[in-house]
Amino acid sequence: MNLKKDALKTLKDTSRTFYIPISRLPDGLQEAVISAYLCMRAIDEIEDHPQLDNITKVKILKNISLALQAGHSSTTHNEMTEVIKSYQHIIPEVSYRFAEWALLAPPSISARIWDATASMADRMAYWAENNWTIKTKSNLDQYTFSVAGAVGLLLSDLWAWYDNTQTNREEAIGFGRGLQAINILRNHQEDKLRGVSFIPEGWQLEDMHNYARYNLSLGDSYTKSLPKGPALQFCQIPLTLAHATLEVLILGKTKLTRHDVMALVAQVCR
Image (cartoon, rainbow, N blue to C red; front, top):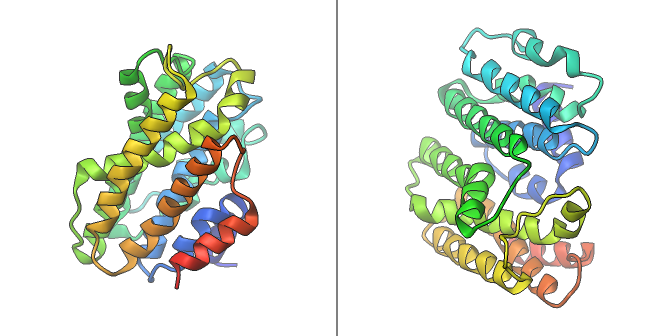
């Protein structure tokens, strides 16, 4: 199996939601977005790993960052992976294979993807060192930028690289923040069990709903400004699902049903 097919299979196994819009992207852009998504997923799996202590998470994340910072056109998979070889038995396969995902990126945009992943790994290491302490809205904004708003900026760069699609970068950050706010709302009970809360002190769920709604409104503006093409097709699906998920969470449900997801995706993809 070639690397692209293997990466698509891994993508489908790790995120059916993002597999759908990514699988519909044209060649070139598809490899770039797969590379970016799986690199981010690789470090996200380490940040969220239930069996790793924070000190170990910090070491792995910083090592991945350094490996990507040292990357260049002739870097091999083995050279890039060497820094986390001793952790192979304790981290998920998608994380250990981060170098393969990084090297899938087209050469003309790979440095941007590696830089974004390295920077995010460093920021995740910071939050692990501080046990994801969120006391204020400013802390929440810092965290949601660290792990999602910055992804919005990377996507904007990928659209511009592929076909010169121009975007509002503040709205791109809101797009990422909105999606992350939905994840926080979906997982806040599980997070509590591990002694972590991403909801600022003194906030009620309604405040978090409003935070998500505001950032999703920026995501709406971001998406509406996109011309017809692959960027628009990509962004519509996760944004539509995020809005729908927020509504069911407000009603006290835990998530969309699989039937709901497929119906919404079919509606967007008409």
